[in-house]
Amino acid sequence: MIRNLLFDWSGTLADDLPNVLHAVNGMLRAHGVPPLDRETFCARFRLPYTEFFEELLPSLPLHELQQLYLEHFPHAHEGVTLLPHVTELLQDASAAGLRLVVLSSAPEAHVMPQAIALKVRDHFEMLRCGVIDKRSEIHALLKSLDMRPEETAFIGDMRHDIDAGKAAGVIAIATCTGYETATQLMTAAPDLLMPDLSRLPSLLGLRSLPRTELPVATVGALILNARDELLLIRTHKWSHRWGIPGGKIQRGETCEQALIREIAEETHLGLQDIRFIMVQDCIEPPEFQRSAHFLLLNYFARCADADPQVSLNEEAQAFTWLPLAEALKLDLNIPTRVLIDECIRRGLLR
Image (tube, rainbow, N blue to C red; front, side, top):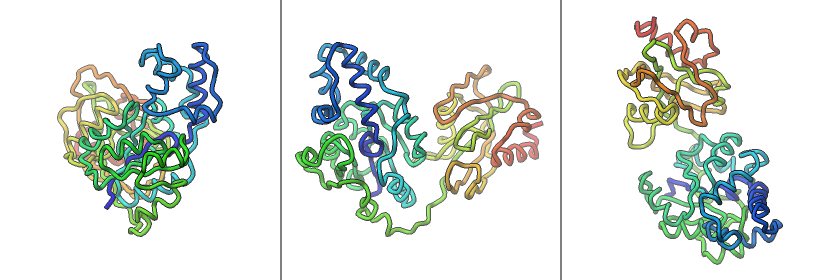
């Protein structure tokens, strides 16, 4: 039974070919090499991309190649769209409880904002990006996530993706929606070759499973600094309202381990004096960006650093430290206001 789906990003889930071609031609022009038309690019491009650039720009070191590519790529998500049937596949897979991961050669600086802008980031447990050779990386990825190869499929649009899947012993599925043709893909002997992703949910049996999605368990903390000021984060996921940092519990973690990890990832803060406060049922929250059912495990904690320096990741737009009276004047999301009220009732906030 398939429990895990690994996805390539470019050409499999997202149509970014015009942007990639624009970036590559910008790199070529910068070094006096004639640009490629779309047909020629698709015929010559291959992974690992280091082999492709070794032919076109043989004297350029890898770090310079990567920097040039970032410089010439258009705005990270501008013009990039989801390929047909991707939304339905991700929704079906998430509803069936499958674990979803992206394994991509594209840089995280592009994939992450694209996934957020296209409203699919929350489907994925992890985005493993900037991978040069997936054939070696996929082994470490499966091991780190405790995924069994026989319960895993890797879906991609290039022969390199198929080779990576076969190297790891997972089911290798090729889709003809991206950079290589069916004729090219067949030379890698995929386990399954599809014109697009429309029939994949049925073939995986996803639509025969109950359509009841289990609640998602998350952790979050109301954090105070040495001046008893509250840390509040503003995020697009909660309709740009203010709330607390936190995230999903990963398999194998205790709740407190997940809290410490999520706070470190989202803010780079360490925690001390962690106290569990409450569980909130959050069913179809009107403020959240999509339909959802969360179990919110709420904590109260203090910063481990006397002079905390907050560094936000891509999930948040702004942060602020405020005393309680000022914090209550903000446009808070409902679960955060409930948590603050409970901390006041317990005498933790004054």
